[in-house]
Length: 120
Image 1: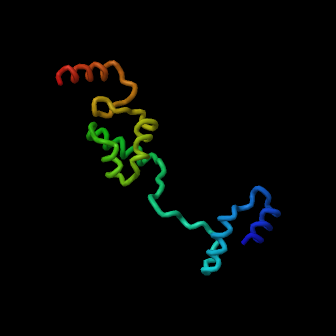
Image 2: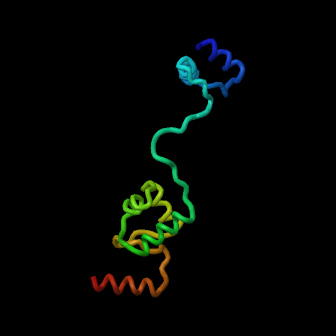
Image 3: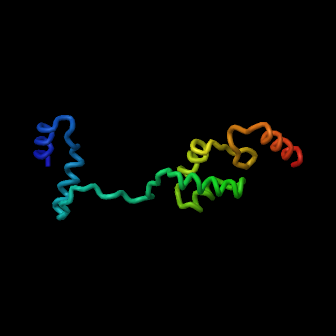
């Protein structure tokens, strides 16, 4: 393995794989696995933010303003870490008194929120 590493280091220079990588590859080849493709890593699937996901989140929030991001993630089967940025960045909303509201409210919406807060 040291010979292989030395040859690769001489040929590829700083772009040569590490000794540990070479050791793992040699062990892989000895087991009979000659594939050079990178196998998918185990774990949670990555999701991409699409317009459909944003629309679904918007529908859920409009239906129940006091819903948590965790509940939204569970309903749509996406990660909680993905829901937060969608709500805050893509939909431009924030949590106010346990309710999702747009970050920029017009005068009527502000007046309605003040009136509702006073009643509570």
